[in-house]
Picture 1: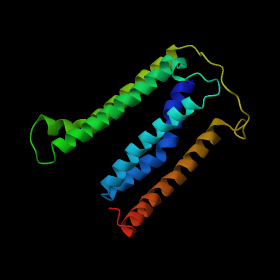
Picture 2: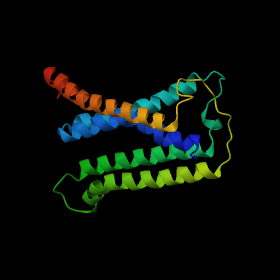
Picture 3: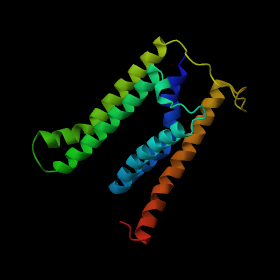
Picture 4: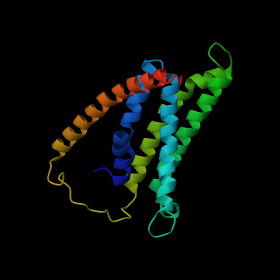
Amino acid sequence: GASAIWSGAVLLSFATTLPELVTTFTAVQRNALGLALGGVTGTITFNLFILVLVDLIEPEGTPIYPRLSQQHLATGLLGCLLLGVLVLGLSLGLAFPAGSLGVGHGLARAAPLFLLVFYFLGQRVLFTLARGTPREETPLRLRTVFDRAPTGALIGIYVVVAGVILAAGRSLVGSAEALADLHRWG
């Protein structure tokens, strides 16, 4: 019953972002905060680069952005809002370090809460938009080995693959730390 936009914004984005989530949380647990922050902001920057690249090589020669639906624009605006809150929180954290008093330090400490609140409110808006908007595009249909699989099997595969990603992501952080130490990158 969910739309393709909402499924892409939640299920697909969760699956494709899971490695970054795992490596970021693992890096924070290991107190490798530079690695965690570099991973998050690097991922965002690289994803934006991919969007620009896709727009440049689009076969019809016309930019994709003017052809986006209201749902696509809402998804992009939510991402921009979350990125803005992240940058503001990081900036306030640098301007008002731990131990300082005042509104700036309080806002820096509240930034993660704002990120969560805006994320879940944004998901609610996206889901509502998806439910109220008629389908505009005809879906591209490609035959896959999963076409005949029941929903339960697909969910099982999704969970197993997510488990593999969790294990690999935790291992990746240790490898990145070891490389940084070996080459004295800090």
